[in-house]
Amino acid sequence: MHKGRSPEPLDFFIWTVEDVGLWLEDINLGSYRQVFEDNGVNGEYLESLSMFTTEQILRFIRRCHMKWGDFITLCKELRRIKVACLKGEQEVRRPWWAPSCLSVVFVRVARRNRQSRVVSLKLEP
Image 1 (tube, rainbow, N blue to C red):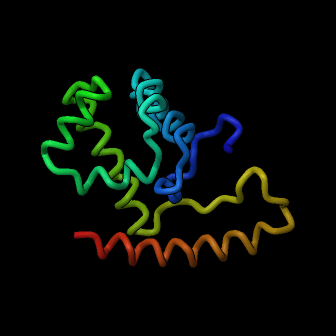
Image 2 (image 1 turned 45 degrees about the vertical axis):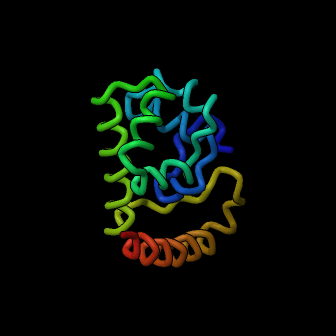
Image 3 (image 1 turned 90 degrees about the vertical axis):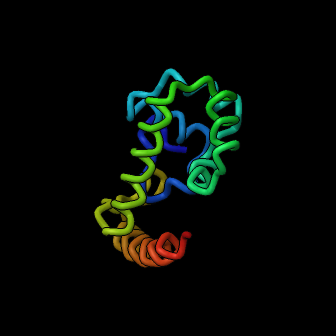
């Protein structure tokens, strides 16, 4: 999807399993990439982590063989992305596959989409 580039943080809830693996490399948790891929952890799954019960969190940590400190790092990085989205700090870039003539249109649509995502993030419990 991204030709080996890091995925766009703005779109983390639609990341594929491959995107999550690239992101794990970026945040120095690349040692978990294979186990996340094996367990099908995608962006939607990462988004749902914030609603996990303690039992579900423990099950996730055991299944992924994660250390507590690494799980906390994962959660902090996810939080950083969410906060940046809420504040509108994420850069909107044209995806690699889009023709350059559509850049202006894409950026406008992405910004509008970001505003709708911000509303949905604010509605989280």
